[in-house]
Length: 100
Image (cartoon, rainbow, N blue to C red; front, side, top):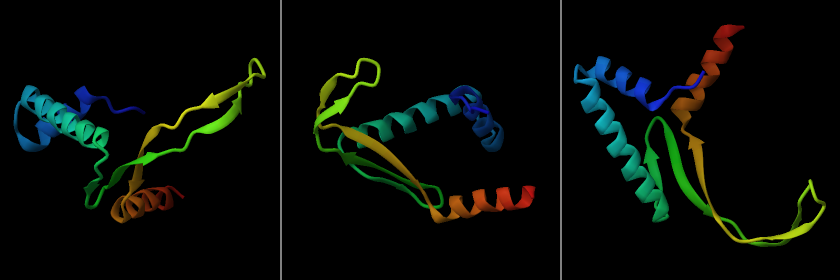
């Protein structure tokens, strides 16, 4: 199941008692701030949830295109990474253990 931004805003509005439009705007502002921070290379730590950071990768002299079998250079690039925090990892583990 995928939780879309609209559905997330609805949950937030129900939990906080604010309007869905206000919740949607708040979520948009949060994601925009997170996006800007990651583009700048800043680390985002949300206690109890996890950490978002940026990893710079090195370029590679060549990688094979599996469709054409052609060697192509891979330029250096940046990746956003998410690592779940301890509380989230434990909650997810409990959910799996509870299903058994």
